Length: 412
Image 1 (tube, rainbow, N blue to C red):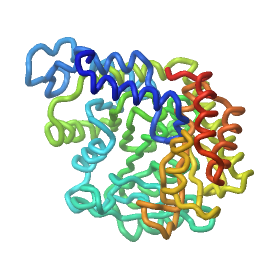
Image 2 (cartoon, one colour; image 1 turned 90 degrees about the vertical axis):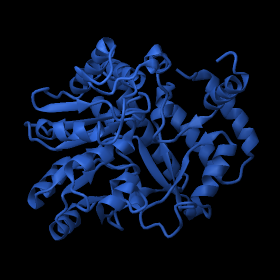
Image 3 (cartoon, helix red, strand yellow; image 1 turned 180 degrees about the vertical axis):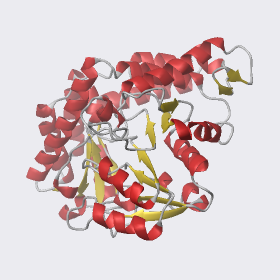
């Protein structure tokens, strides 16, 4: 890369940006040096179309071992038996992983029941602008207008009326604990499969700070399939894993390859294996616990400054703020905060009357800053910066304060 000065310069600029700004984007984190080195290793040279022991190219003895190691570590991290569960580590990212699950388990035109996009769902949970909403029919459910939390009794009524083939639990902008046992009961009552998309929650589940979607206490089986990205709270590369009960694994494997993808990215799989190994360390449990502590303190402090927190708080790593209560849109809030070195994303809130391009809120997450070593006192200070910035204080002055503050918390 030394010979490509333009790219080298831009990478350095991005490094400087990351180092000098507060990253509160809930879907981002910082990977370890080991993960980055695997991504940039000679593994990127190898084509490995197929699965371990059944490749369509030669020279795959080593990469077979890498993929099998990633699979084994994925099962071990979440306490799963290889006799009852499988882990497919080949999906390039979360969106194609969800697509592959539907391709395997839901007939074309069949019904997928997922949370409304503007209430915290994801595009690939059957939304009409996604291919998942064009090839399958989304049956949507929402959030209770008063509590801004899931209404499981209403969800059950919708499921009985619509009889979906598959129900999706797990969201991108929902701050409360999801009751996977209730989702399982609803799925059983209507004869549906249950997919848990734990992309945002995987690190919290691995760290024993959030309920598992695999099984409840007493061994009760919950999800049929669990999908997760690996780059959010799990602190891995941009990739995804599909966990499936054995009876669905062959169909899902075929849907991933050859149904949807070609050769897997072995460098990405190796980086995933490293992140999975890192998540087994005792320090990771402390990290997951601290993420939730930090999110709760940040939400509480912002509420103290009279910002409206959707559902009144958080039980995870993220939460939403209704910024219109102070006369500012989500886009304005995001742009204003970025000018001060605070990075968030604009986000719709439940029953939002505004466009997703300029919604009524912002989404805030604590995972990335927790990786940099921040704790409750830092969250209180950050809440003050957010409040003063949004209320019209000098953005350049605050950006300078933040840049100096962040020197105490270097990037991994």
